Length: 465
Ligand SMILES: *[C@@H]1O[C@H](CO)[C@@H](O)[C@H](O)[C@H]1NC(C)=O
Ligand SMILES: *[C@@H]1O[C@H](CO)[C@@H](O)[C@H](O)[C@H]1NC(C)=O
Image (tube, rainbow, N blue to C red; front, side, top):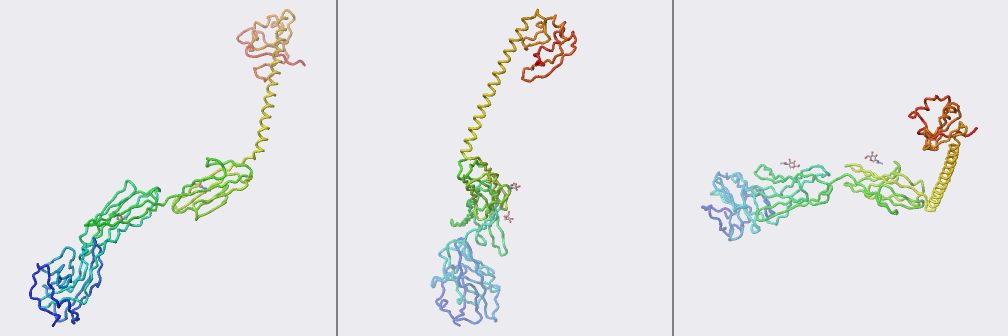
């Protein structure tokens, strides 16, 4: 009797409900009147909360089409309703919505973009005159908190040079909220597209797709997705880009003074440290080869050091560093060139220099000798020419300059040439000599000046037998 009061009439437009003192004091569990809902509801500013709720009335009562439900902010004397619903009327304060079908015992509440001042205790009341009841055994406490949920960015695998689409999803699945989504990325040429997905019950999720081609240089750079709601509320999520790429190699040498990364010259007894420095993502497996033989291998470090201590000739050769990960293999090589020690080099230089000097000396002597003999022969030839009246011998000495047909006396030609059967050496200008045998030469060959082969030859006397 105390729990049930007759509701005379409520002006639905009256926003402030003066709740009688009895309401708050009703603690008795009236049989048949039950409510099932959450004791505690947390809702973030900018977002929404769905509070499932059902209520019952005694079995002998049947709820009519005119049943009304109210959600009331319970503030003692200043209690007021924030939402109500019947078949005929619907009221919301803009944030609280009674979405359940009250005629079926559904008192579900939906709260969207609450204010901080909305925090507090709420009660549900049903009215279907003459049945009126306020359910106080469960009075949900609505806790309004700051916006802490963040957007979610899809974890997409990024590989150097391969275009990807990443999705940012706004937090919350609400009915009327339309957030704005934006991306902040350190790269150009991105394409963005915002879209939403509507679910059964009218709730929606908001997404933004961004498409781009990640590069090795983007690795570890940040990517932000920012979602902005009304009242300048915003929330953002950051993702550090993890761009995978194939290995690249730098070979560094320590212990030798060189800028050359392809070859180093070492001396006997030297020590050289070869470092294979690999840049890759994910980590590469690194191997040092010497002429195709594995000499060092490592996976856990990205720099693999090969030390050559007290080098001997056997250490010389081609060293190759190879790095492999799932995106590729790279290899780079360095030639270790062995050289004798400095003292050995010294003796080699001394030997080479003395050799050169000796060669020059021999050459000089040769040239001097040649010039001497040439002069001598010229003198002889001159002498012979002076004796033209004398019986011309069948020996002819001549030089290229001198070899003119008129030099040869006609007499001698007529008389003698056919007798020239000695070997005659033709000087072609070089030191080369070849033997030509003039035998029974025909006279007309000699008489025609153009035909004289001797024009470009030096005819020399064959050594006497
Ligand atoms: C957004 O990107 C996701 C993931 O790549 C894809 O499944 C979805 O179809 C895209 N949506 C639109 C509308 O392009
Ligand atoms: C170096 O790379 C080539 C191809 O890029 C490969 O054929 C060769 O086997 C590699 N050498 C080593 C020692 O891995």
